[in-house]
Length: 124
Image (cartoon, rainbow, N blue to C red):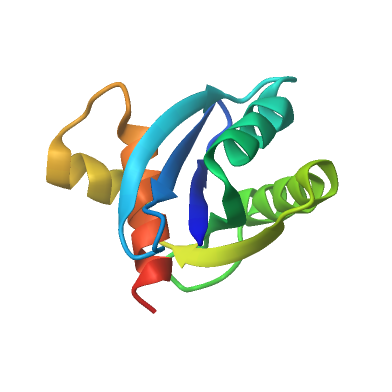
């Protein structure tokens, strides 16, 4: 069972993928957050045999929802409608900052953040 992890951002969407056994997560690609995003994610899911999508759901440091939380929930709902795969929301807090701390800033940091989100889901 292969999973796709998503770190949603207003400009870019980081993606990560699990191995075929669903045990390890790896950074995959960066998708521009534009009108083509659903098609691009759908193509990844189809080409890679994805069975579920795991999306990071941010909350503030007190565990409360934010404006971004609502935007991501709406994106997840639309993603399910467009692609037809189950979308599971995974609590994430400061995943991008953690990815930067671990690896330094680089062009694919959003994909690294998606891998951290997916990894936290896989380790449940």
